[in-house]
Image 1 (cartoon, rainbow, N blue to C red):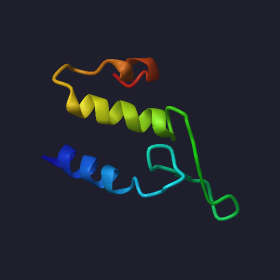
Image 2 (cartoon, rainbow, N blue to C red):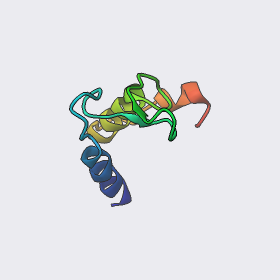
Image 3 (cartoon, rainbow, N blue to C red):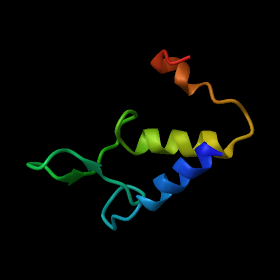
Image 4 (cartoon, helix red, strand yellow):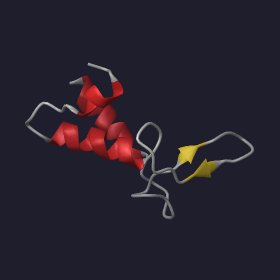
Length: 68
């Protein structure tokens, strides 16, 4: 299952002790890794993906981004 592979890769990236749930966002060479809370590039989006993967129900949060 390809989704399981990418979920595994996502979980491996939670390695920052000072990150949000272990995650940080790369913001370029000048700014480096930063904490990001947002839906598109931050911990909120990571959380939604992980919850959707674990849930038996079809996620509908993608509708707010006009992706479905």
